Image (cartoon, helix red, strand yellow):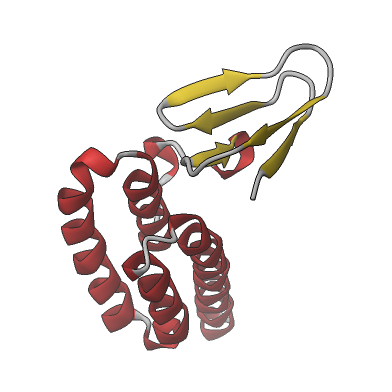
Length: 137
């Protein structure tokens, strides 16, 4: 089954190891086989991996687009997942979903779930800041 991709003017995407930039007009095309595909909005640069959940997203992204170095990323992914779980047990369900997707090599789904983990992390940090503010009043 083909995957239909629509790109906005000047939008970038990653297709395998190639960065593709669309021209000045919208376009669409079809991917006929399996390939690592990420839209510009879903690509995280290493410098943006500034929290544990964001670092986990970056590692899953690397597993998705750089299969040649999968083993080294998987070890770092496992270690970081365990650290996140130990620090925030409320992340267990999301981490389990991510781990299941990673085990099936469904890295795109793992990335989608890791975005939920990032939002959960933001909520946890926001609650901590609010609690600290209340405690100081």
